[in-house]
Image 1 (cartoon, rainbow, N blue to C red):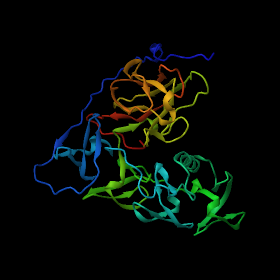
Image 2 (image 1 turned 90 degrees about the vertical axis):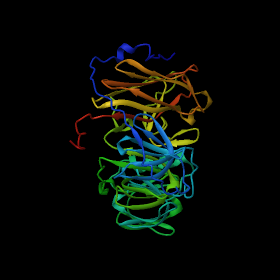
Image 3 (image 1 turned 135 degrees about the vertical axis):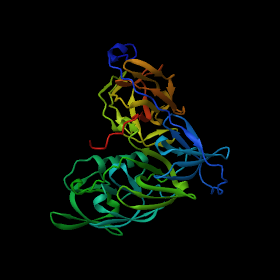
Image 4 (image 1 turned 180 degrees about the vertical axis):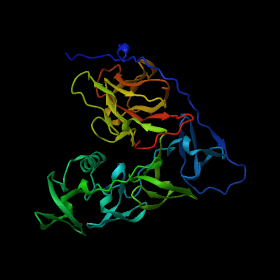
Length: 432
């Protein structure tokens, strides 16, 4: 028999004695001017989530770095959301992937990726045709790697992306479709072949034999991450961090972190994350403690932005970019900072759990339970939570067995994040 640990039955082990008082500021939105605006083009409806947990649903009239987000709500009223209050934009209804979703990917730093047909590549640039952005020329020193042969399914594509991002290498590397890998010096991609240097000899392979090309990490130019940016996800699976942005008259125009300028119709946007000093995703903050004690079988460690198996987070067929993948029974502890005010997330079982999965989510602050979910099963829409953590020292996230024990309890804390307030002081400067 495998010993188990009931986290909820032993809260005294989690208690912390230090409590810090921090003022909680609640963001506000206001009505826009009463002047009659121009008619909106036919464009999708978005949910705008604010830092106080509320949601405004409407169509985007305009959005930029310099100004607020302007929405037209379901009643036809204009609503203005100040930039510091916006957390996330997402399509009001699930969006089906559109045109180009089967094309290869160019993988970039900061989690970015662009999908498109690879027309050519050499030692300087990659020429790509995107179904959303058109023809793009991407500097090779801004690329982590790129796929040649499209993946058969999302899980296989996720494996390829992990190989490109996470595999340690001191040179360029070919990942072949038969599973072999070769350390080489990349030269070019032509119409039908991949050219490379091996022991200073020029070699070529048919494109259909090459799964992906990983480039030498030592030559990668990683852009600085600005204090404020927007992380856009598009309907073909492309993901791009924009440091310049303007949305007007149904089109998005912007500049990526690697300096590539984009122009796209707004109906190709799937979601948008606001990134700034007020929002901290737990997938980017190191846990102070992690414990997983399964009912039976192996203890799968917590994963960031994937399930415990490393697959994309998927609930009811819809993929989510950020979150924590856990299994029951697990405990995660994060040290809170004085500016941390609220914990927000959406709780669900990943589709991989199937009908037997059943878990209970608990949120504790310094050992005091602040939230406990009912038993959560597969097929249920994610449960949105907003928990006050102000003044706390430790945030505890527990994934516990449901009534069915620990069978296929593959849980996800979607978009798990902390909302921060700095009061009258300026936020810290990155790097200080």
